[in-house]
Length: 175
Image 1 (cartoon, rainbow, N blue to C red):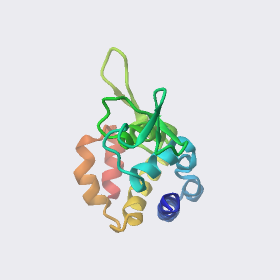
Image 2: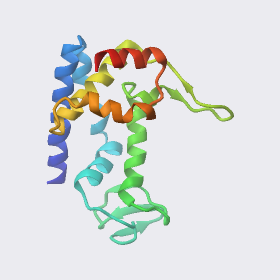
Image 3: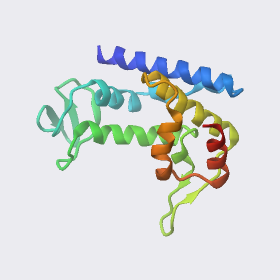
Image 4: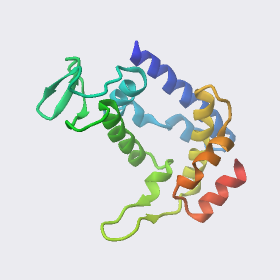
């Protein structure tokens, strides 16, 4: 049941993003948006985080197999579970979210280059990915039942985002 609930959400999100991408002149991008969410490395942690069992400590309701946690003996490996983890699903989700950001250039985090010995470098986002990012934000609010809350959401989050000046200006003109 939790997988069907998540599938319903992902399809609803993809639909609203597709509609927004059409308005921005990138319909094919809208069709292909977030396809990585169907990969097992993203799918299972997302399902568990949003629709699964809330686990405070991976040892509470999981068998430990080597360094992996197997929730309730389900045979589904949701990722590394260190003894010190506060919340099992958040560890697995964090890994899945990082993979999602690195697979999808419409996330601003994709364009931040972390360096070994220096401060991160923020790269300029190409226009097509700016458009998809904006469509993603608009579609997410609609899929979650908030309507187009993009302006409010952006106002709350903009100071935490590392965006190049041109990208930020482009976004702020359209919100």
